[in-house]
Image (cartoon, rainbow, N blue to C red):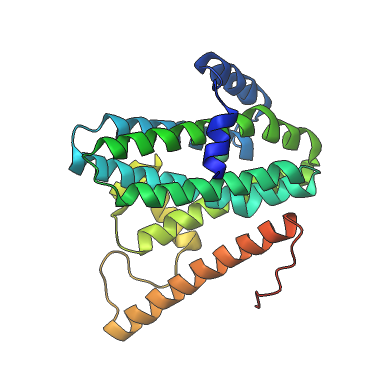
Length: 259
Ligand SMILES: [Fe+2]
């Protein structure tokens, strides 16, 4: 049985909309403005909206567009949590929660990959989308109702500041990588992530490749290729670091990874 099946079975009957709203209201009361918890709660809302927009899209082509947006938000959020928040939970005595978190997010990514291969106009697509939506909704319920309030209570204040700084940085870095991949304009990506294109420009100056001309500009073919490879290497290195942290939490030695 897959993790996602276990999640779905474990939540039958699932928590009600009222219970979710109640947990979120309590989480909002615990979070401080601008801290890691409030940023995550904001991203959870954006995720819910992206699921709803994909479900509500009128036809196959519009579903593909909505699904891309959902994928962007889901991946950016998941990577930031996996790189920063789950390791912090592991350090703060919540190793079990961190392990469940990694497992569930890996499963969601695998199911998203399956969804992308389905005919967007089919009922099968809508069923799979709903399956993932339910699993993600339950995952967020666990985070908001139990895992993150505990982290908020148990991690020292200095660690909380660091988690906020690193979570924000990971989310922005991921957005800049997407921007620099050239698949989307700043306006498109900003709309997908719920931020202004001005903010994206600022993040790019902070975390993007220094000296790169904005937009289509100025580099020769060879330099562009090198820049592309550097971006890919940086992304792979970050994924490797996340995996190393996950393995450390899961108690497995990351022997096969070298710097
Ligand atoms: Fe989350």
